[in-house]
Image (cartoon, rainbow, N blue to C red):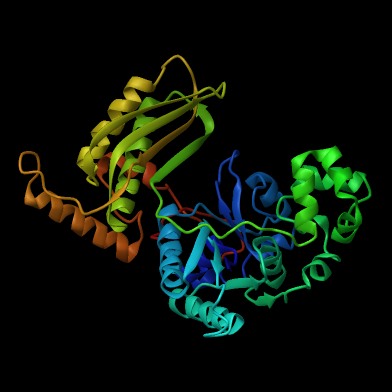
Length: 397
């Protein structure tokens, strides 16, 4: 099961004015990358993974949205919870992609009917479009899902895997990226059928073990099991600057803002962290990180001093910085508890009030004074006045 253009769909759920508009979600600076593109934007050649500058050149009318990772995680968790309640074994492959093993359910429900009802339940309760492909294994199901999109479903009956895959482009095989596709095209291999008919020894001699795997996938052979889903053990946030910087005040404000946002996600997910780390990547691409073990917490006023201390120890003021990041790991279930020596009851009350505002109006609607600069944007264009706009993550223009 795959949520269709997930980031775009979430933005449209939050703002119906974006429906049927070309949308690009991702970094808005010169170094920004497209994280998701609507089908309207794809029509012009824009796609995920493309530099944002190039995507905007291809589709100058596109509405560009920075996006909020916390918002996307919230909707992903909602869909995850629905699937978790309905299937015996499932794997969360990414924030918007799921595998479910329905082996043995035919005698009770009928797998295809059950999957159809599950898809309808996800769409009804989350408001998000989702597609699925059903087959005997992961590879064929994933390809079938992509062929079913947008917002549809497709079943490949047992024994018809090769027949289904044969007319497709080899680029449809999940493990075939752009470079491999170019190599195969130079060899005259453009359709899966050609790959199916090639001797596996030839592919193995040319590409090694991946060559055999590619031949197996092309022939609908994939014995990988669905890996049982486990809750994530870490959360993180990173920011790549549009231009390398030595602005310490800006970097410090940014790591505080990321810490505040991640702490909110912890509390929202009823999690606590006991390991905090900070990462810095310099202009020469050398990357350094430091971490600290702490008592389990999800409190801003506990986490921010730890993060700023790590940043001060890590930062080399003689070099320009390209990227900064914050990561919380060793997560466990739990709620933030008052520390009788350090906290006041009003501190917890403050967090509850701020989180309630975020829950209702969005993660960036409220922040501490120290992080306002990094969470705010000076101005916002009207996305419906004919000009190619940039919509920041917050929505209170």
